[in-house]
Length: 87
Image 1: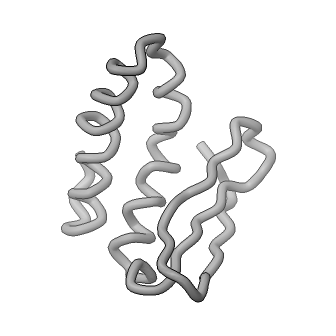
Image 2 (image 1 turned 120 degrees about the vertical axis):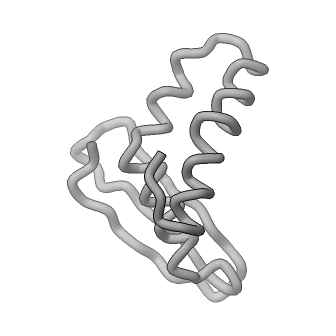
Image 3 (image 1 turned 60 degrees about the horizontal axis):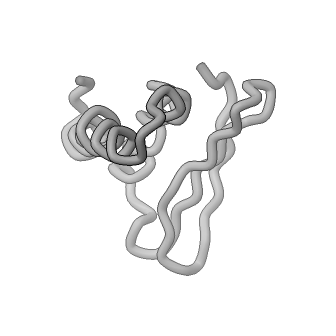
């Protein structure tokens, strides 16, 4: 798990996390505009905490990666961002 996360606030509308595969490089969260909200930051932190970026590499099929991302990574992160419930 990443021990350090850097946050960046942008002028334009932006939301996302940049997670490096080298754990010594800090993860980054970029938010701005209407996405600069607590729930969005929590959503991105959930992706970092659960190492969703590493799990996506285990699937060779693009369809399997896509389904895994939306069902196993994005949905729980949405729930956590909105309600604070860890799945």
